[in-house]
Image (tube, rainbow, N blue to C red; front, side, top):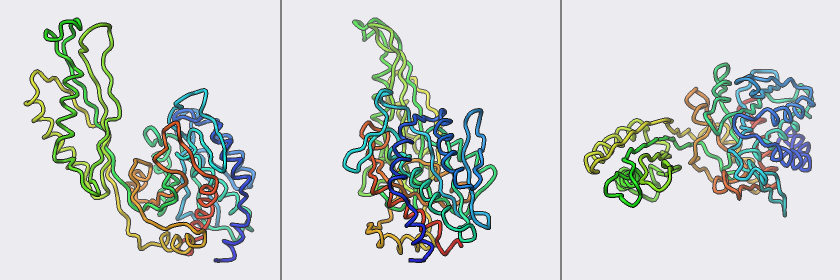
Length: 378
């Protein structure tokens, strides 16, 4: 282990890191309302004396961008500070017990952000001449449309980014693609006691979804190419009547080597057959979002650093694909090479059981420090 890395690891303060994480979780920051948490983090980062830039995304919404070292950074640590909306606005704050921290965003991804901020503070403790050329980017809007990262990429596209999404500290150089599909069925409203005289939009939607689910496109295997999820379904509500409208949203997560355009074409064929098969069906379909996945060559300088540092931290090194959507897709499309790596797990993210461990968050800070100091970039 290099002397510089020893110095930086010694400068990582577990109690300061714990406090940062708990205070970040206690600041409610759903997408669109990130100003308070950015002001909090700006104050912490500015105390190092290293300039912190506000990058405006829209009024009262801004990214934080900081850079250190003698050269333009080839590597950025990237975290999103926004969360999904609280499942219970009275009960979203941090709770700590036996080294486990629960609360909204604890895994996705305030744990990763807190670790990156602690890494930055530890790197800043080095003499200026010994600091690596590295950047820190804290973005808004990832949980909605990625507008924070998109704004950054308008001005800069670093060679590498490390994104602290929850992976249980298993590195992901490959990433699933993602599609969103909106479906609407129309029916005929009639009194609920006379359903045979109406047309039930919910029944039509259920038949459509069943046709899609049964398609060979979604045949399950040990390593599925497509992961199909009905995310939302709602209908018109107007008293004791047969509903005349139903809306559903489908998520598709695509393995890294699956082309979204091909999937869309196959789904369009399925829907043509579905319209013919279901009597009286009135169906509207829109493909609202699609983004391809990627798979990076693991023969790279970040991988070399991980192979060196994980045994030192007694961490299992297993390379996995990242199965959710993230800003990693945006960075890859722009020309960056993303590594997804962070504390916490997707299993609890976006749920009332969201959690991460302080041990994982501290280990993440040490891994981020090693990546920032990696010989491949300095």
